[in-house]
Amino acid sequence: MGRIQRMKPKAMIIKMYTTPFCRYCKVAKSFFASKGITFVEVDITKDQGAMKEMIKKSGQMAVPVFDIGGQILVGFNQVKIQRALKVA
Image (cartoon, rainbow, N blue to C red; front, side, top):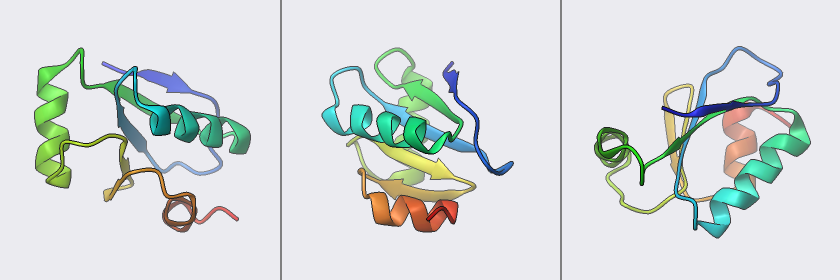
């Protein structure tokens, strides 16, 4: 499955679908780490079921895809992620 990263300020579940070669996935992980936010990372290159789940949720094949408490965001957009997290 995925790995758990850092501590998050709220009990909101954050799932990030990634690949090891995605530049924006690395940027997103750094962003979460800088805010002390916990997330579950799911590498879709290692889990075909997770890839299908990501595509079903987002309608996209691109990563990163974020499932933030049920809200789906495609691509790293810091402003949208902060709004979804309610983090300044």
